[in-house]
Length: 293
Image (cartoon, rainbow, N blue to C red; front, side, top):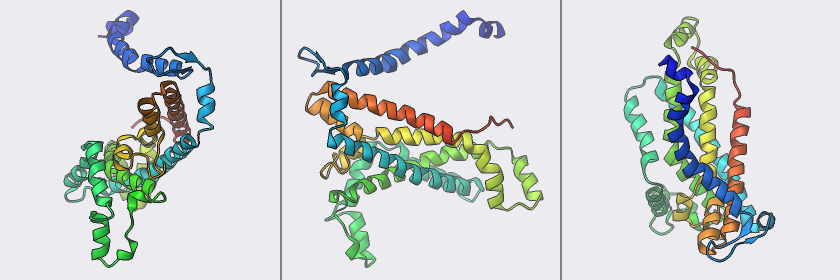
């Protein structure tokens, strides 16, 4: 085995099939997308090279600027909703409370449900006439707080962020909980002998040792928030009046409704750049030394 691992040709043979698949389904499509972003094309008529004109038009497009702002709000909202809550729930279940495995399953279950099904379900929950939320507010005597939730441009995006939190907070909790359980128990035993409280144990042991996983989790949250499509498409379609329009939904509209594939590809390139920048920013914020147990 050591001879195989020390032979670069052998390593290349094992890596090559995976690299070919990755290139065919990831690298080549990305390259093609970048290429057609410099053209005015509907993929059927002859293409016209326009250089950076698509990008110039994008940054003069008020709908696109609004979609980009909404994406940034989704990123911020998702980070605020997911990281602290997942960390809180994960730390509670890490204390080996009764029914811990049951609660892990309950929290994780929404993340395996199809996004379209989740969107349709919550559309009924938010329905202004027969929705569960308005009926619940009426039952507890808060009928004055009833809203047309998804038709209010000031509330629609917040409503979607709540759904995203409900669906994925359990997923991120499981990731963080797995990192906590990888910490040697002897660290906590030593802390308990020294009289450290649960909060001190979390602050001095748990949080510093799971920072590398928090970095990975933050990257997943940010890139996922930039790529959301199904929930918005099902729940609001980008409305009302583009209040919940995201770059992904606007990219779909420009590509498959107006057949401006070059323009749509430009949105995809900007989305890719934002994802790369978010990864670099997360690496900077959560930078930490390598930890060995």
